[in-house]
Each structure stands twice: as C-alpha cells, then as structure tokens.
Length: 268
Image (tube, rainbow, N blue to C red; front, top):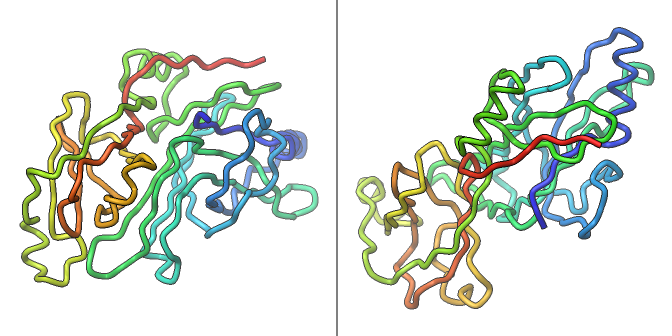
C-alpha cells in the first residue's frame, strides 16, 4: 500500500463553510495511530483512525491559492508513558465554523512506509517524526504529495518533485554483522546508553535532509532484537544504532522521505 493523504468529505465541507461564512480555518489537533486501512479504501471517507495511539502537534502552516502547506509531528518525549508502536496513520481536525465542533479535515496513511516509534527513555535523545505536506483543495484530490515546509508556487514544487529533490523512494539493504563500533557520544554517557553500538552504511543516494524509515523484513526479525528502531541519515551514508551487533545479516527496506522520484499532482 502506498503512502496517501487526502482531505475527507467532512473536511471539504468544512473548508467550503469557512469560505461561505468568511471564517478562518482553525486546525485544532492531529492524532496518530497504528492501524492500516484496507487496500482500495477512499481516504476521503476515512473519518477516524483505525487504531488510535496518541495526539501529536501541528506546526506552522501557510497557504497559496488552493494549497495549504503544513506539517505535523510526533515527539515521543512528550508521551513518556507510551510504549513502542508502528506509526501508520494520522488524522487532522479543525473547528467547524457553524457548529464549533471538532471535525476531521484530512486523513493520511503511511501504508508500506509505517514508522517504528520507540518508547521514550531519558538515556537517549527524543525521537521526533515530522510529516510536512501540501493539502490541495479541489473537486476530488487523487494525489497529494508531502513536501518541504514553506510556501512555494505550484511550478516550483513540481520542479522540485521532477528533479528528485523531494518525494519518496525506497530500496532494499543488508545490515551486516561486521563494522559495528562503539558510539563515541554513547561512550560519554557511560554503560547506561541503550544503544552503544553504531554502524554507517555507505549509500550514495542518501542525504542528511532525508527522513529515513527502516523496516526489517519478517525473516530477519528474530535476529534484529537489539537494533534501534530509529536511524539517521548523513550525506552519503545511513547510520544505525544497536545494543549489540546482530548475530546474522539482516534484510531490510529503507524508505527515504525527501528523496527522489517523479510524481505529478493530479485531480479528477
């Protein structure tokens, strides 16, 4: 299942009401979940999360013509009692200008790119997952692509997509047993560090501005117990963390948000 984000039918009605009543769009909250919708589901008809986990935060937002630019994020340090989970969906809410009730505006599914979120522990830095996006208001949105935060024109954004500066790409990788070293920063923290080992995998296609989503294949899960569920992108390499080096090679898929690819905006 592909990543998808779409204004709901309730959201389109709410935006129309804002225009008719000359009222601002008041986004109220974003909620994150771990459920997956069925293949073929029209996201415009999805008015609640499949499996709610926790609230998140809505960042800065701007608009240009029929496009609303915003970002949402989940910070595990703000939910210290929440255990580890796979972030697979989120839904954005706004205040209806007529009824003042909280109404769903847009639903997103990460599909095959769901993000493992670790439980918060003070011994390691907080894990923050941000999802910048563009919401296009039209009769029926077929594709809405996540984009870098900020205001850009449609032509500029299309050029960024076509040149591969933003978008989503994925590739299969092998995590080896050799090459793991003590994390210098972790060493300063002493033996209490949860993931003292680190490994850099050379990947020419990776840049530090990309957001990585690493999914270990089912056949390798038994040997991946000590691998940190989050990783880091650097220019030309992917950095992994672990409690100890795995005893066997691990097969995984790496999705890069803000990577490469050609994606068109289309409406019906």
